[in-house]
Image (tube, rainbow, N blue to C red; front, side, top):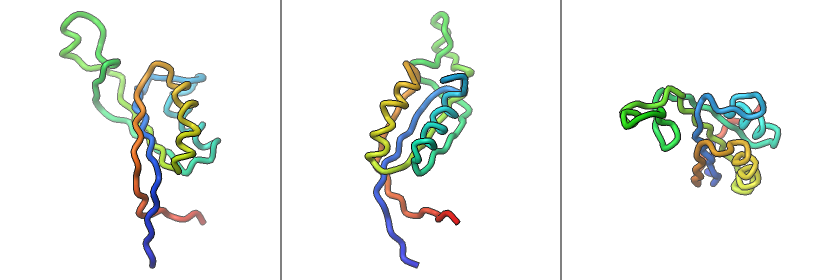
Length: 115
């Protein structure tokens, strides 16, 4: 069996579980959008705890000692660079003023085949 590696790009989208778009959870709306655009694949990971500039509980100075109860969600999409670049403006629009997106070059070392 010959092993080949392929250079791709990974888009990581950090949002909150309560974020929505078009009546759906935002993470679901993003995955459905990626699927309609025929991207190779997307995965959603729901975390237990996080913090960032937008997910501290509001209030007094004590809010700095408490974290949000909105669970963190990570959406990962891996595909060719040009496909990621094509969907990124749409994903940013869907996110509004929420979340963060990171991009990284990745090497795909193994990819299962469809039957």
